[in-house]
Amino acid sequence: MVKRPTFDSTQLTRRAEELIGAASNRYRITVQVANRAKRRRYEDFENMDDTQMMKPVMRAIFEMSDELTQPEIIGGI
Picture 1: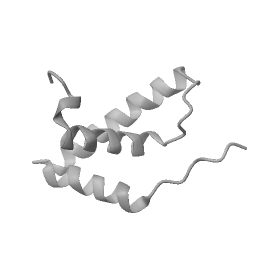
Picture 2 (picture 1 turned 30 degrees about the horizontal axis):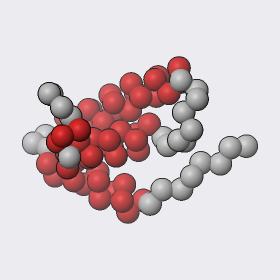
Picture 3 (picture 1 turned 120 degrees about the vertical axis):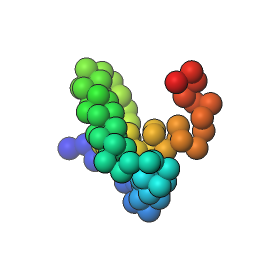
């Protein structure tokens, strides 16, 4: 059985709060996180060689909060 690495739940909570705080609409940001997680889930399912075993919702929150704090990641969006 493959054991998932543990992540700091306080960091996840802090990043989720940053996303919600920066958003003008809580519902919309929640839907955006869910859509990204769903998209990443299918991408990960196709690419089984991914070594990082993070749940898609957690990964989406981390990615979106990184884009919020580091706008140079986004590029031309």
